[in-house]
Image (cartoon, rainbow, N blue to C red; front, side, top):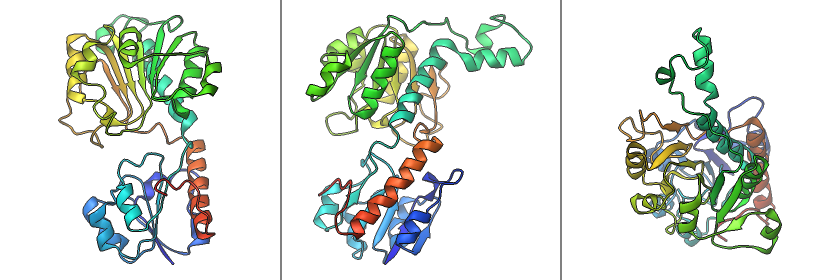
Amino acid sequence: MKAVVLEDYAIQQGDLDWSGVKALVPDITRYGRTAQEDVVPRIGDAEIVFLNKCRIDEAVLAQCPKLRWVGIIATGTDNLDLKACRRHGVPVANVPGYSTYSVAQMTFSLLLAICQCADRYHRLVQDGQWRTEEPAAYGLLPQVELLGKTFGIYGYGSIGRQTARIAKAFGMEVLVCTRTVRPEYEADGVEFVDLDTLLARSDVLSLHCPATPATRGLINAATLAKAKPGMILLNTARGALVDEQAVADALKNGKLGFYGADAFGTEPLPQASPLRGLPNALLTPHIAWATNEALQRLMDITANNLRTWLDGTGENIVNA
C-alpha cells in the first residue's frame, strides 16, 4: 500500500515525526508543501493521502482512482468536498480537539497584547526609554482591564467553551451565540443570546465556529453596524467568517476598536490585504494550533486514524 503526505510542513517541530504512520505504511512519500496544480500528479497511484490545506474535489478524485482514504492533518474540512469523497467511496478522517487549549490560549494572547501592549512596551524599554515618552512611535494604547467587561463568543464547541472558561477566570461576563444549547452547558455560567444581542453588548467578540454556508461572511458591514462601538474583534477560527474589507473599514472609522486575527480568507495574507499596515490590527500567521503539545496530539491522532481504518473500523470519519 502506498501513501503520500502532500503537506509535511504541518508536523515538523522538535521530536515530532511520521514514524507512527510509517510503521503502518512503509511506502510513504512526503512533500513539504504542494501547490494545488501538483496535487493530482503527486497523489498518482497512492491509496492513502495526508494533507492540510490542499483541496480534494471531484476533479482530483476522478484522476486518482486508486485513492482509498484521506487523512486531514487538521480539524477543519473546508478544503475537502466531502460529498464527492463519499461518492467515490473515500473516507475522510480529521483530527478533532487536538488544538483546543492552544487556540483558546492564542485567543487571549491576542487580547492581552491588544489590551496591555506588553510587546510594544518591551521594545520601548529595549530602546532605552521608559513608560510613555514616545507612545505614537510604538503604537502604545491606553491599557484596558478585562474585569467586568463583556466577552462574546460565537460558536460553542470545545474551543469556544475553553475560551469562555478563561474569560470567566479574568472576571468577564460571557455571552454566547450558538446554534444548539446543550443541557451540559447549563453549569458553564454563561448567558446564551442571539447574534444581534451578542453584537450590541460585547466589548470583545471572539469567533469560534467552522466556516459553513451559514457562517461565511458572518462579520460584514451589516453586522458590524450593529456592534458595540469600539468593540474588539478576535478571529482564531476561519478567515472566511469575516469580510476583511468591511473589518478594515470599521477599524478606520472607529466602529471597531481593534482586530486580532490568526486566520484569513487567503493565506498567506496577500501584500494587498486591506488589513496590512493598520495600527489597530494585530495579525499572526495562522499559528495558534502549532504548540509542541498540540502537534504531538495531532500526530498521535493522525496515526491512530490510519491504524483504525486499516483495522476495518475507522475513527473520526467525517463523511461516513
